[in-house]
Image (cartoon, rainbow, N blue to C red):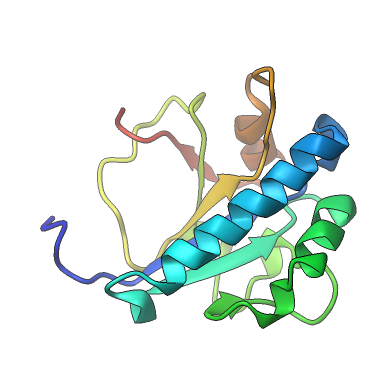
Length: 150
């Protein structure tokens, strides 16, 4: 794939890991989500980038409240549903087969990007590594899990 060619890319950040993070880590997550949005909104091919913030299995309300305080609802382009946290499994125009949860612990390597896929990044800021957290989330949701070819 030519890295310079525009491609529709949908990315979701799962902020439903509140129970694994401290208050400081949740603040760092909100800051990093804001940075991700800023980069996506200034990208050369920005109409091809969609960023969603959602919760994989509920929870995430403390992280979402920090994101709301940072102006989450005004971020464009951003797929956002109302004032409550969206579930990965109920994102508009997306089926379970479209979701690919990225995890460093996944056995499968992501070999190509697919325009129809939604690539889910686990919004987990941890000062200590929580092994398998994103892979376990993908398994709990019943969605495909893959790791980047690094």
